[in-house]
Length: 254
Image (cartoon, rainbow, N blue to C red; front, side, top):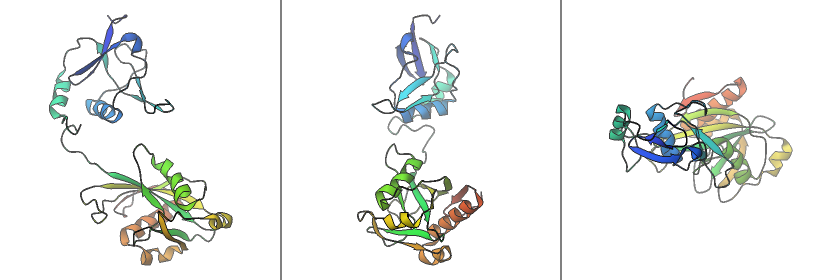
């Protein structure tokens, strides 16, 4: 039935005809929409030897240094248009790519908790802002949170310490930060305890950091706005207890 005949990747009403010889090779499709469509459709990946289902490698960079495998349903050309595919098409908004109504569009930020040898917390005042915080920034397209935690140290502080595990994830929409309708998810990583030599090498980037200094943990609540103080206090607790914490607007016990 399959042999050397063409094989089609059926997603909703869209069918991409592929030679069966190319079915196991890299397929250039939109990664976000393809993955979302696979998730919503309930598609599952079976081994490459399973007739009717073949994993596709999605090229994520031009140099092919990163690849991902998505779930996909492969079928002989002319597979019937299924009821589930019909329902999916009815829910699909071609303008936004959404399925089943509006979805959250959260911005993602990363912060890093650095301590000195006396366990004081490194705080910075970002350039152009009056509020102090631990070093942080928003992710840019295609950046991973762990990757950005390292970049924060090098780009903002001019140091290269070993960044540890994730301590806290905080769902924290802030209507006062210029994006009143956007949700925000923030990851806090353990920047570890810095040696005196590393502290001496801190060279803040004036374009991003206006001031910096180490402060005792008990002063955090006096120096920062409540939601930031709660988040940092939770990160300190998670670090001391070897835990990971889930927060909502800086508070939570999970």
